[in-house]
Image (cartoon, rainbow, N blue to C red; front, side, top):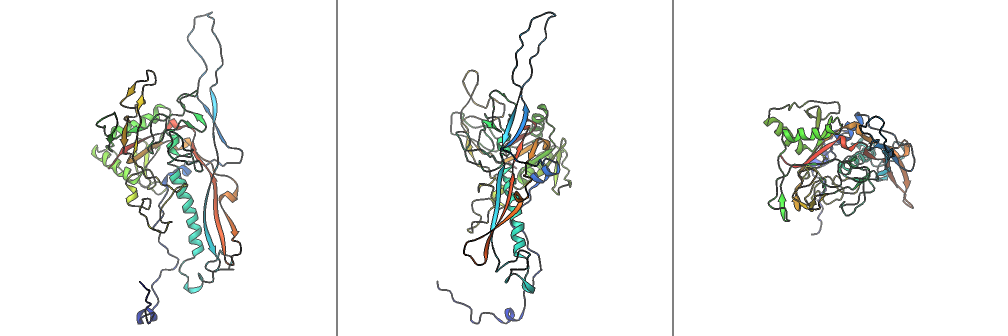
Length: 423
């Protein structure tokens, strides 16, 4: 249909009145908060990366030999390796936008022909610069729940460019993670090999039992309760962990608060130092994070499949994905000794064999001190700005904000997590 302009262009009201505008106010209807990262920073996990071929962390995984003996008894003394190192690599995050000097000014006073003077409602350059920071924080927050490995026979997606997050850290190489992955190694170390189970974390699966274990069965989301939360705490504590931080999506938070209320446990909703409402369970402050793994959050914030046609109206992580949990199918679990088939995982996780899993909601009990946030000490890559001119363009430059960092865990077994429940 042909466009028909208004004639005259403005009516009496529009041509004789200014619009009511509040100066310097733009309401955020897109980005959400990142409590996981903020809480880790408060806990002091930042460890500047000063350079080198990678980030190595020494770990003790074995013991010297020892036994009770008779006086004068001969013993055979051999030396076995008891320590090694994990290795991670810095990951580069970048957010960018084209800056048109005709439209906006960078503070130098040389540009901003349009966005200036009494008619300026808000500074466009400032909006974009703040957006760059929020975009990088959003990517890191979402990536902190995913992984930073290449795809393989047991890892479904390639995320080698981003942080080595919780999905790979809290795994045992046998059980499926909340995203349907099994990580045979972490920090370059092979799980269940020479270092044994030193880097293993067994998930707690809370879904319903399938109708069959031979294939075609479905496990739907179950319920979380006081016993499951106590089990999570116990799994971290038995390995020497002292979990004080709990992270779940808002909908997982809802399910947990309802579960605790049924038992009339502590459901006090109190304010904490990083401005996020929290429940406390057995010394673990449980925070609601809008970007934590969830099947339901996609219907309320911009991470679902139908978030607009512009192409930039969805919250994304460092590979253009998100933290929505989706169904996956487990394989056949077997007995490591006999090779026989098992209905459930041999690790006591509760995951059934040959079953379609509905992961739904997720909760992790974490020891903040076991994490490291390794951001470079080089200013140009610590939310630093690079400005480059576009060839032959008379007004437009490219603005890029850069961050070199990685987030990983040096004592995974001090943490625990559960999934497969709903509100």
